[in-house]
Image 1 (cartoon, rainbow over the protein chains, first blue to last red):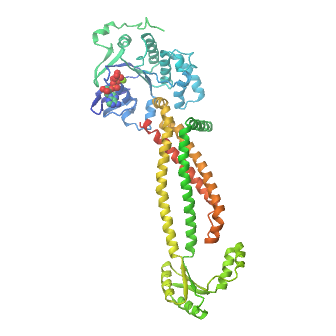
Image 2 (cartoon, chains in turn blue, purple):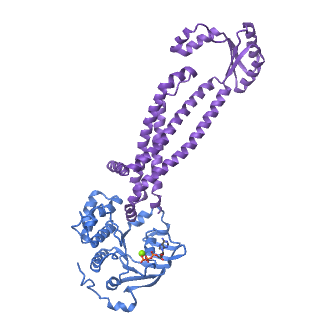
Image 3 (spheres, rainbow over the protein chains, first blue to last red):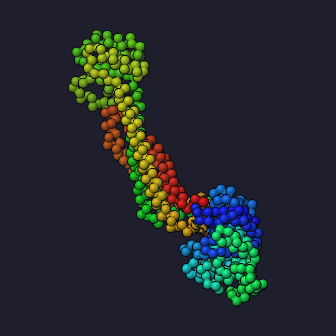
Length: 242
Length: 297
Ligand SMILES: Nc1ncnc2c1ncn2[C@@H]1O[C@H](COP(=O)(O)OP(=O)(O)OP(=O)(O)O)[C@@H](O)[C@H]1O
Ligand SMILES: [Mg+2]
């Protein structure tokens, strides 16, 4: 349902992505890995139409991203939830209000907001933190609020650009469980990460980008094929559960 | 819907007070711009009215006769003039008739003329001409007569008035374009403060799929608010100044030129509309420009 077809994006001379073709199915959980400057964020920005591809076709569902007018971009983005490394919560709003904010933007009614926000906070594992301000929350809890905000409008895809980058391993695993739970509800999850540990143990599809090219696309590990053996079939979170 | 509009306006007002200093600067600059516009606008309107009045006398040439010119000489002139193609009608007006006409024209103030010991007016010939060009020919003809003290016709006056009005209008237009640009820049910078302080919020709104107009809404209202407040202030000041000016010179102008100033009532309505439209457009364009950077996609 997400399709890149020979997509190329240059920043002046610098390669962002070059002739990238990839397809991600509805309901998938995909890791996007690669060294710094590989083009991962470029990939994400092209999907959101924050950037315009130089050539190639990007499809999202039945939308052709390149052909969307400025007025249609909001529609595209309502289908995609996004989470960043630095949470990006509004400091003067409580957890509840931060999540509700996303619903107000799509003009949800007060009643829907009141019903939906607690459900989502529950889903991300912080049912009792609704009235807390970001500075009163731990980093992991803040990221959970960010995830809640990203999914509250029921996007078909959740994109997380290094969501665990600022978190210690235990907390990171907590977020991973949340993402997995969201994926199990049917939401496609695309996670950009450098965390080899996490990728190796999740045993999901891994798309590796380097220098603007996809150099590998298979199920399993962050690194080379041989390390795939280390990935346990189940109970990946055995030691980290929350 | 009604509630959300009220909420939005409250937000706009809140923003206004949050940036008190810059908001005041914006309001000040828009008010100054409108004051200048208001003064020139009033001036132009009055000039136009004066011109219309002068144009009604366009087609009349008045010839004042010397004391020494007798009735027979005057009658001969009238006959000569009536023979001309350009002349519709020429007629002799004695100074007694002229005085009576004058008294009638002055109306209530006519009693002022009672105190005159001697009629100061000359005998005259009044000529109605068919066209403005005809007036020139008539004047040439009159100049060949002897016993003429003065010739009064309005072609020059009207032409001068037209050219003055034109210059004033052009000058006002140029000045307005400049002043409007300055106001827009000041408003833009004011709203940029708010926009920048809420950059994070705007970014999140965009990621969640807010439309550009949804994001612009509160900032647009802030701008429109600034514009409307400025319009009200400027309107108040201009009306006050104008009615004061009318109180001071209005009556005298009435006596001297016989043309009254345009009453405040008539001006006020037009000014109010102009100020409000201008305030809203300056405020709105300021806020739209201030957000351009954030909303390019
Ligand atoms: N706005 C920009 N202008 C110019 N070059 C850019 C811009 N954004 C990214 N680049 C370059 O494009 C390449 C890909 O960048 P991108 O942000 O996609 O990398 P990344 O894989 O997300 O890296 P990281 O893991 O560090 O976030 C890099 O070489 C980067 O320097
Ligand atoms: Mg990146």
